[in-house]
Length: 157
Image (cartoon, rainbow, N blue to C red; front, side, top):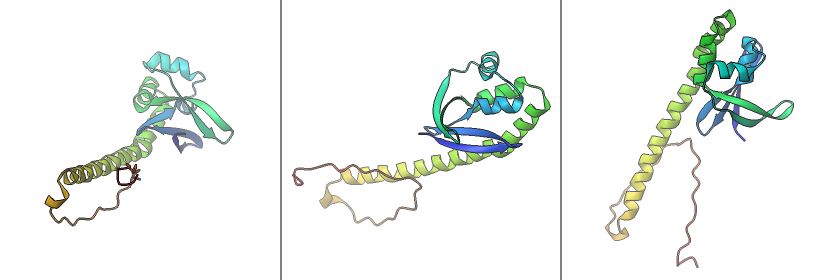
């Protein structure tokens, strides 16, 4: 099941679903705010969106929703010149988009840090034990959970 973040714009929900480090918006929420009754027609008119559907948990139970990336939300907003579109666009750019950009930056930084440590350990492990230098280091808190798979050796059998 994917992570769902719910934001509120003028008492209306704007759900954002994170799938594989990518954020997608529930197009029905955007269209409800803009007053569009048929999200599929609006997407076909203004974007080249390939349908992406995901099952998410809602207060009414599991529901299948159509998702669109940020670029398609921006296309829908730019095609609509109404006041609601202008307010929603401003709100998304000041409240929602910056949050996800900050999350993406911190995730990328943590991954780069972890990759550096793992490469160092791989290099260290390739040196025979009797030739390894005495190395003392500590790992900072890393916001990832590492899953280590134990490899059985001849000694364990």
